[in-house]
Image (cartoon, rainbow, N blue to C red; front, side, top):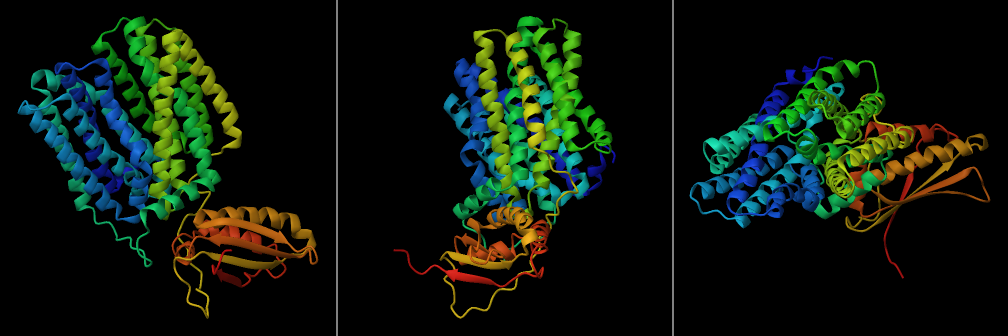
Length: 524
């Protein structure tokens, strides 16, 4: 596969170009807001709050935003969030140009743009598998990472030049215009309607279903664990690079910009390198090699006084950064079925940003109380240790391992009692298992239990009859009859069916027995 293969899809290509321009506008906006606060007499604290106002909304509304992305039409959610950010950026620009802006207004409107971004990102991540082929998802994730890193490299520089040549207001207006391009592409995209025959879920129920899925998905938990362990340490690059550039290398803002450019070059190069690497190596091998590359980069940043050597190391750092995060991002997308993808990706984004925020605080504090060299050396040791601990226990999902295609083979049972759709239901299923299959059946049923809980079961258990050891009874409790219908009609995947067939193959007749459905009546 070539590096740019996902761009052959017209919608992905148009969205990628528009989003890249919008990402540049976002970084321009950050520089403009920080400069404006300085010119208004702000302190170092108020300047730093610009970044807080941008990222805090993800922690406040990330999970509800993911639920909304799964409940509603994702294309419309993205258009609405882009429109909201357009309004906030335009208001910021107009007020600045009219000289009627204050520090509180800058932070409030920046926070508004952050809210729009927090709503947008889970849906943006969730639609990627709809835009490219399944085997192209890792490379599409790499290209999205390239977009972010190019914007990080050139956006601040363009924003600084534009502020100097015109004003911060012009930067804000330019950012507002960048949202128009994304909205235009989304309006042009004719996405097939995704409607539920059972109607939309309530947001609170959808959040519960999403967190339940994450809790009972070993593959997704592995991705989240690997993401957290990497981001906690790798965040030191972004947190301490300005200190390294200024204090040890003696560079000014221009030199620091060149170092950021080196990271961007590495990220772009990574798109080409990864296309070839994925043809030969698994995601685990790529993440492992790239993490070790980041270890080497951290040591160079810790001890080198050579600008050239640091710049070369940052190229490697950009490549390693994009290799690890695009692989983790793609593994998260592949591990999630369509019905819960936005909620799962919202969790991924929370872990990603939380790891970066916590890591930046940790390494900044350590560098303040010791030295930058010691902090970055600790980062290198921590990265290597985290890789050794997590690489064996937390394997990543490949593009071909699991089939998340929706499958509905369930026939609604004929019931004498019309169930209340909001009352809990206890499902009971009996199996006959020959003695030689008892142990493998228990193991297979544990996997089936996780499948039941991912799709809707609140509790699950398996019992063996003491008087008749070949008789096993499966029980699982679902919060409501409506949830049980969703479990079978909307949430079942080919992978879930495969898990069930593996368990049934160990029973006496290999056939699915009839299930009993007990509707909640009374609790004493």
